[in-house]
Length: 335
Image (tube, rainbow, N blue to C red; front, side, top):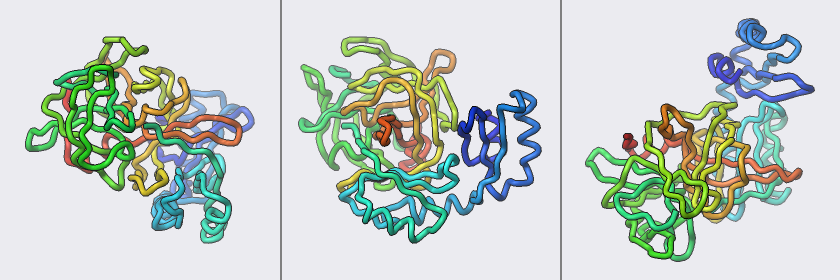
């Protein structure tokens, strides 16, 4: 279903009264019969439905700019938010820890198009690695702890380790977070429109740690990268706190989010969401998310944070690795 939806530019897929609903944008209404035919060819006709959104693809992209950024929605840096098109609501949804008086004007400015929801939002800040460093290592600036994501290189051949942009300050010296700390390098770059930062390292490897407990020596070679797609299953995360976690499932493949405190946001629909597996915890920020192909890790992105809705349900979100590579003009070493 996810593949069919992607083929026709669907805005989302969700469950309603026991049926799988595919939401097409208004500008793809002419494809309704074709999508229905493809779905009925694979699923029971009573279990699928194709609906047409009130939104065009262009309108969703417009709202992503005017309601999904601080400049557009007016949410101050004192508060965090996550924003995306919700197929279930057929509205652009902003989830935030801001009070009602901050959120209500956004709805008023976009009547019938934007919905808001107050949620709890958290942004999460292995252990004795040495150069050449792997990805998914535990790192610290002696105050906060996060996860180093993946090793990348620039056109000059310089090697960096990614992490979440909200973890540390520019020019901080970063070390491994184990009992015997090794200097990883200096944090040289932070992208303000991606929750991503680069730590200059003297040696890195195209592998990530993948063990399920603190003293594990398991690792995986990196085999490349790809963009996540809605409904994608078989996704793993590998963080310094919750370690290697299977059974993640991609939800949204395009979203924005901003932590409070003036920290880097992820804009331009470069974020994605996921559910399943164990809940994330502090220190997992920057952790790589990946799927396996021929025994190698295909990197989808890095973890940033999570929301907890009124029913206590966790949804993780992160930044696509493709957007980080393009922002900094980087390549991903593979094995």
